[in-house]
Length: 440
Ligand code: XLS
Ligand code: NI
Ligand code: NI
Image (cartoon, rainbow, N blue to C red; front, side, top):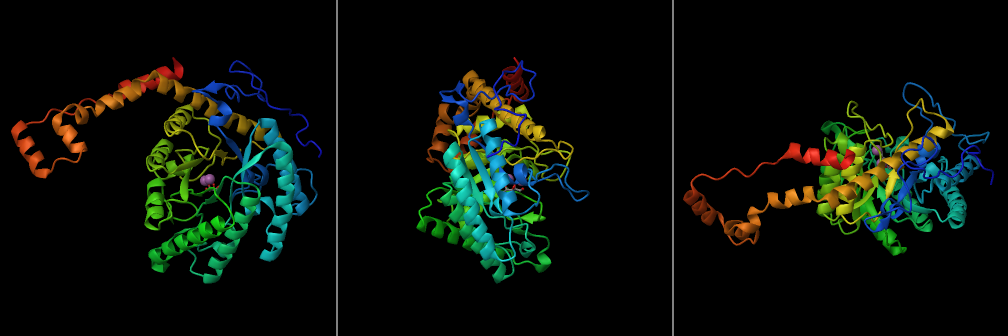
């Protein structure tokens, strides 16, 4: 295999003082934090689609980045193989151990599904060889059921039974390939599983059908020996106005309603949480308390814009809050997939590395600071004391032991007459604690 990034060698860790743009400043793979090396806390993954396919095209102009990777004809199997070569070189140089893919990222889709499936068999053999040589693994696979025009009304939620059948066929093949590549999980992001107007939509029918497709996927995958998790990746809008998997809480309700909660967990994407009007850490916490925090799409949005900008994460406050949730949850069974792309004017090969270095360093800093915050203990201590009245008073103990009722609490309140205020929330003090840990 020819080296593609000839001027870039393996990215070293050089520490925060280094001015080398092609070095890690915080991500030190083997540094032990809370008993585990950084690389185990942070199983990073490369997103095939942004890194190897997207060229920066938007609705106002064509791409700026050359993702031909030296191949004369785009969207050929030769091009698909060049992406594999370049992708594995890229991951090796960054020390990234996982990748995530959609079916149509790894091969060009043909008009006839039989030919697409043949191409998928061919490319997955090629990928598998590279995986064996490098030790790089698959985090999750998925089927792209939103780009092709047949999915304009959704996939599982389509009004057309024929489209539903094609969605099912793609899911089957994508599960086959994910299993073949040893993927840890299989993901559903319901890109067009939503609607624009109730004037043409039967919401209940569509949701029932999405669940049918997911149940078939679980049944089939288990029958061929796939033991990994399934994921739903919630997103509130874009491309559809109303998306059925609005946020973590909505997706959890859906999974429970249809009895899918034993097989599924959530893949939380930072930019999707903020589009839903939540912080990233909110959706992580909601997933974690339900035992459904599976994996993370690590990126960030722009709060001044109303769409999914998929930026490389640079915000250390957010990364710290995220890693605090992850550490408290005991780590991820999945990983951190950089569902992120360079800004359109950052179109060079070096920019591809700069994006990942920024993202990996930001999460490394977040991990270091989250561990310090936990070791500092002031936040945990404050939260514990804030609820102390349920442990330290008789009435509190009765409430949480489910040993009281409205009549008794009514009598209690009448007896007290006027309650004490519940104690200061001390938000400003706690924000100072966070700043002390981050910058002190
Ligand atoms: C789009 C989603 C998508 C999923 C995979 O907004 O983030 O990239 O992660 O289909
Ligand atoms: Ni997204
Ligand atoms: Ni995503």
